[in-house]
Image (cartoon, rainbow, N blue to C red; front, side, top):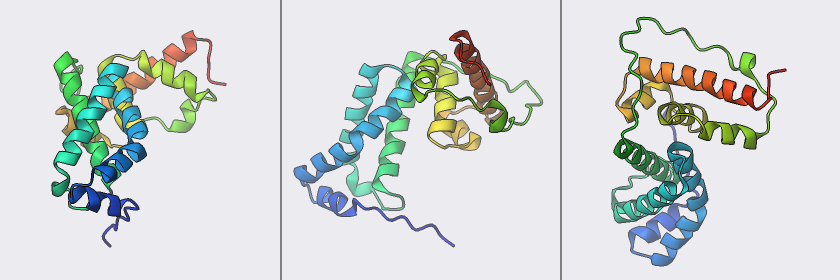
Length: 185
C-alpha cells in the first residue's frame, strides 16, 4: 500500500506555481518559524539559521515548479533547509570522528533507561553546547526523525559513524546535564 500525502496547503503551492507573491508570503508565514528552528538546531547560530531560512525559501520558490507533490510542501521545504544547513556546517569545516575502523558498535540502549524528567528548555540549551558533529546527528535522529542510514547519506558519512556520533552525543549531553545538577531519578 502506497503512502498518500494530503497537503492542506496545496492550493497555496499551486498559486505559487502561477507566480502569486501573496501565496508565497502565506507559505512563508506558515512555515518560517518551524524551518528556522530546524536550521537553528543544526547550526546553533541564529544569524546562520536566519540566512539558511531566507535562502531555503528563495530556493523553494525559485524551484517550486519542480515540486511534484510526492510529499507535502512542508517536508519538501524541510529537506531544503536541512541540506542548506549541512552545507553551512561544511563551510565551517566541522568534522565527524571517523569510526570506520571500529568493527562493532553496540546496539542502542532503550530510551527508557535514559528517560530524564527535565525541562525541554534545559535540554535545548544543553544540546547547543554539543560539538557540531554530535549536535547535528543527535538533532537529525531525535528531533527530525531520520534513521542512521538517511543521516549517513545526508552527511556523507558511514552508518557506523552516524550511530557512534549519536551514542557519543547522548553521553556528552547526559554529562552536560549532570554538571548542571540534573540527574536521572
